[in-house]
Amino acid sequence: MKRLVVGIGGITNGGKSTLSQSLHQLIPNSFIIAQDSYFKDDFILPVDSKGFKQYDTLDALHMDKMMMDVDSWRADPNLFLRQRGRNITPSSNNSEIFVLIVEGFLIFNYRPLNQLFDKRYLLEIPYEVCKRRRSSRIYNPPDPPGYFDGYVWPMYLKNRQEMERIASEIVFLDGRRPKEELLADVYEDVCQEIDRLRVGVTT
Ligand SMILES: Nc1ncnc2c1ncn2[C@@H]1O[C@H](COP(=O)(O)OP(=O)(O)O)[C@@H](O)[C@H]1O
Ligand SMILES: O=C(O)c1ccc[n+]([C@@H]2O[C@H](COP(=O)([O-])O)[C@@H](O)[C@H]2O)c1
Image (cartoon, rainbow, N blue to C red):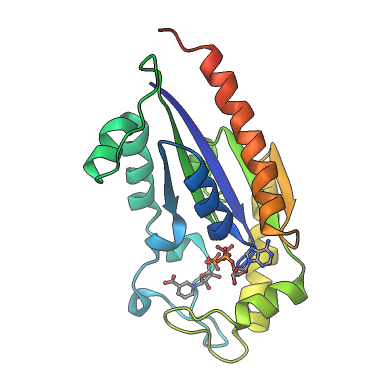
């Protein structure tokens, strides 16, 4: 049983979920683990000196739970998918390749997770695009007035610097490019990795 772990990280509203979903639809026996699903409850999170809830930090996330899920997939992807009611697409010689797509804004900032990636993609968009996209998205709870400039953007810059110290071998992607183009590039790249793995598969 062969496994490939793909990370789709980057800035808030960079297009991580969009790209991950499309990739998942194209790749048989793939599964998405999204970091957004591991946010701690709002009432637990502290506020900063300006009164902004501190969502944009690893401390706001149940990274322990996320790692348990990633580890559970790594231990037996076949069982992991079956336990979640997913059908396995069989290959001709019993040599299925399982692909885990991990997506999130701080996936490369967390060392234990970062070290597991076979491929790392990072979506980037400039300040204006990010602010515009974010303003049309409603989170739960919704962003309070001034949140983007007063908290989200400064935290992005801080997290980005930290990521550069931790992660390497990153493929940078311009999130302003058409979705179809981004998908085609990443899909081709991942398929090459899958083919490389397949060469080593014995029947
Ligand atoms: N390549 C793209 N070009 C233009 N808009 C995009 C692109 N990718 C995503 N979007 C839009 O940007 C917003 C955020 O996308 P999403 O995939 O949820 O981002 P993320 O998961 O990184 O926060 C959505 O409205 C989505 O439709
Ligand atoms: O999902 C949640 O519970 C949630 C609640 C409040 C805020 N968020 C925001 O989610 C952002 C990360 O997710 P994303 O999809 O925008 O990359 C981060 O910038 C947080 O400020 C997320």
